[in-house]
Length: 142
Image (tube, rainbow, N blue to C red; front, side, top):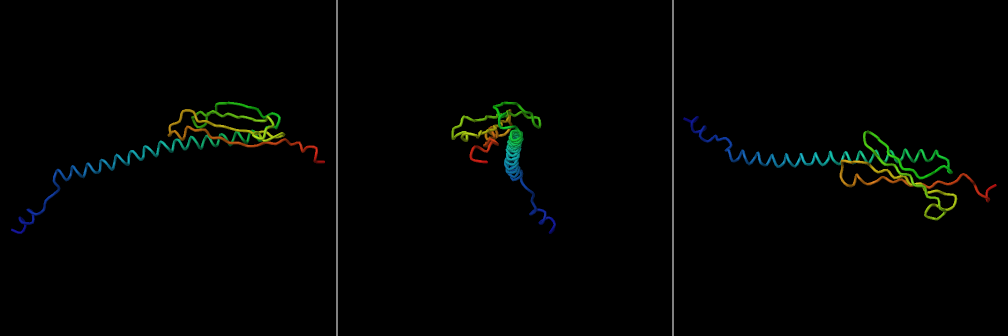
């Protein structure tokens, strides 16, 4: 007799409770999936920016080895890790203070990713600027 009373009080979940629980899990699951998609998208964009930074540094190192008189404006397309980048070098040497004055050249290297996957921030260019001086010491040095 006690077994029948016990069995009558033991109830499982109703169909409505189960549907509500599944709905809550569905909303949480879709939120997590959206977060993973967002993270993967921006990780790809960050990878493109890091590769663009590495290309800009590599170009700057090449320009450091170039003699002062041979520095010139260039634009080239470089492929790195399956992605294309535009590398633009601008040399300013008009003698103004903006370009560093006489005996100096302001060198700007701009690397722009090609077709990128990330957000709009990852489409922006990486810019490195340096100031190069001549090796001539001038009339005041012996």
